[in-house]
Length: 244
Image (cartoon, rainbow, N blue to C red; front, side, top):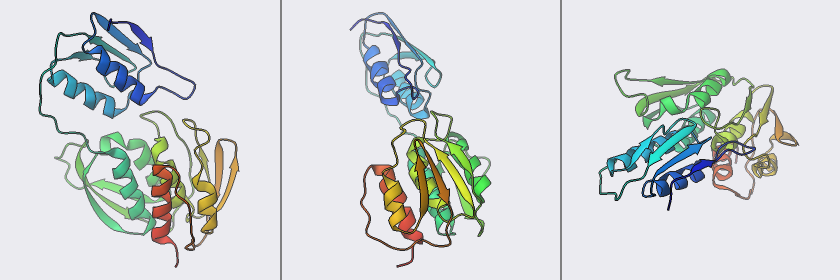
């Protein structure tokens, strides 16, 4: 492999796994590789941290331009993987859906600011319980107001609202008061959960890459079909609060 300048942007943003693959391959390539329009997700920075500990020479991970100078070999290393921000966000939304009061440990608060901002607007409060902890992996308390407010949000590449929490947030907004608007800018057709939530009594109107969520007083248990991983999580969350 030889170093090269590679552009990884696309109509819906940068590719996360594409960036991870090119960056990993470039560590042992001869010469310098520059990735332009690289994904900025924290998982890319975490992977670069591991590779650098193994002897790679990577700079700029977490920014739109990553530079990799190839090395002759990589060695072993010990690495603690960062908390899963999508799982953490899913738990926080599940706590809100059930009007719970939940403590979540190793919560990547620093990496979920777009999500906690939307949750705050809805009436769900995520507080770090110990300010001496690293906000990238801390303990938070999640509590919810009884009256949830509607919001508008658009999915975007990091640090925007993640597409992988869109379905879960839609489930929560199904039981809010008023009309919410969700626009999907990463995968415009990622709405397989819309007809399934409708079976449970949700009032949803899909128009292209946008869904209007008309809040209802309650959801009702129903047989539903799981599609992708996050849509399935959204249906589980809806089921937690549904009657029957």
